[in-house]
Amino acid sequence: IAEDHHMYCKCYFASLWEQAHAVKTAKEHDQIPPITPQLCVQPIFLPAVSFLVESSDGYLASCIARFHQARRHMQGIVELGYVLLQYTRLVKHTGFGGLPVMTHAQVCAIAFKMHTLHITTTAQCFALIMAALTKIIPAVVGFLLSGGLMALMQEQASGIVAQAWASWGSLDAAQQTMAASMGNISGVVVLYSITCFVVVLDVIEGRYYEVMGHPTHEINPVAEGDETTADSLQRQEDEDEKRKDGKPSFVVGRQSFFARASLLLSIFNDTAFVGYAAITIYALIPAVMAAWSLIRRGTDFEYIVAEKPE
Image (cartoon, rainbow, N blue to C red; front, side):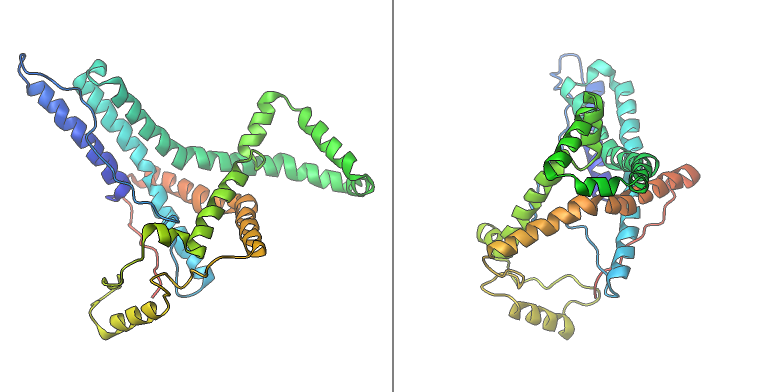
């Protein structure tokens, strides 16, 4: 799939191959520079990740469209094999010592990131689901059937905290590390929620646009068909009317303490309690489908474009 993911890897190795061929054809007295990647990426900072799709047919249709998009994204698992294949061929061409240590490290970092995105995260989610089905849920059911809930309600709060702390202390260091990394008790969820809260709050209250400047309205929005039609121009005029002082209509100004607290709790709830369900639906299942498709049909894949709002 010739998307940004693949094109990055392709351009990355293209610069390495160009230098490797130049080294092979260079004369003995020529000064040979080290084979290092020449690709330079310029980041574009956005207040939110811009991959969420939306359907005009409602919430359920949007969820289905997001699943189709996730399925297409997970097809990028083949890029891990592409990187390893290019790296193996390059090392075979130049020799292991023909590449600088930094180039070896950067290629390994790219492969590690792809493995983390497509395999490690889905494997961790699958392991947590299996742990819940085989250990946590049976233990909770047994606890409730044995009358443990009534006994817990009769204890004081200090006794509950002491019991929970004793249960945590009964685990060894490896078990505590595993529980913290696989569960929602490591503090990462809190840090992630606070980070998202700060970014979203800056967008809603308008601080993001004070730093980035006001958006221009000279370019018509991207739409299907002829963008010079009267309907397209009318939509642009309607959008301009919704803006205040050059800012989008969702910029509502400074929020109260309770509004900020509600936003933070909402983000924390989505992250802590809905995160693994979303990973299962939009990462684990599409990754398994992509891997099975690669095993059965190789790289023969139908490019699916998710729906867009009208």
